[in-house]
Length: 577
Ligand code: F6P
Image: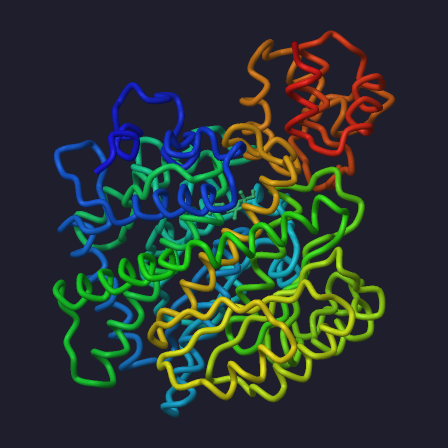
């Protein structure tokens, strides 16, 4: 194992930061890497999820204690599956964690429907269903909202297994829900899933609350000894882009929840008792899926390059997906603006799902009335995007052998008439597809064909899409070393993250950040911690503040200088002495 891969575990490596916020030593130079180099670094980072080193302070995914906890949680789910009357399994989270809660709850409810069983899964996402498709970060700060939405979903239930996901052990929304569960042990059994040790959970006071995330996690830890609560918090290593928990955090969330829920389903419906060995074996299969995905390094790098070129030429990227894979496209697209595009006036990265909201099957139903960004069906793509599509744009088809290939070919042809920049991620389990290959080659499609097994398709797709969107934004210059420098500052966690980047003169940094964020003309301090009121702003707050701090130039001067330069990373290097 590479030295850099392990050194984040040393107690003097960025000691003030939790693992999920540390910068990864493996990706320090990712902003200067080639597309293939970028994919190679992402591969090394993802491999950290499965490291088995012992003797450090950190629990890892394959540790006995973690596997035993997964087994115990699976047994609780099994009990509910066998006797679903008045019972519920609730998955909840914010941002990507909430999107995965939705996705996994839907997938496992679908499995129950096929067996003619009572549906037992529900999801909650901070900000409601619109957050499935766009960033809604302010509600993440609201513990009461979390508690009320849990209460609403569980009305009338007598037994609830609540699984709250917060990769950074940090979201007040989830802390409020866990606190509520702890106060009502007769109904609720709380499970916390995240990727920091408890002592690194966020300890910042939450306005109006007597608890912090850390104090809630500590209470859970105590109860966990008596199996009245469960804590699943292995370290999976720092993110490739510091703090970008949509990547490894999201992948590890998906792996853990799927391993637990499928073990429970196998025990309840196929007479396969839940056991540590089965859990371990399933996790090893995910490890293999990650390895197999990155065997296509050059193919993924070609997609990164194409999407990067589109962004550099002010074009856009569209994912056109079929089946469950399509939601992974919607999810990846929804994460781009908050992570990389604070200054963007137009949404450049969009996802579409074949039948729109009918296929999505979300609680709140169609949301198209919220605006064009919420129009997600292929029909919408044909009307809104196709007419103005050019070679500057990239289109990526995402499908598997289970989808209607005639439909894929038809849509592909329409796109091909407008742009030659069309690619595909296609999963299949066998190699008999000569006919299809010929059909696609006839319209010149650049196809990344991943040969894997059915259940690996989703994780593999997530990894490829994360690589494409992250890599393309790196090529566009939106990353400095391995830090997001153009992030939206829309809640308290992101505010702290931005302030950390501006550590030079802390007080001035806070003032400038608040000044640029809230109002460009008047200096107003956000003392009420109310991020909702202010909403996202179109200014590149962090780079603006950084350059102004380091050069002493006025904000207006810096803003016009930044505007003159296309590549943010280069602009920073040029402007900062
Ligand atoms: O605040 C935004 C965000 O960082 C998203 O990028 C992320 O998916 C979400 O918060 C949830 O974070 P966590 O799982 O750590 O609570």
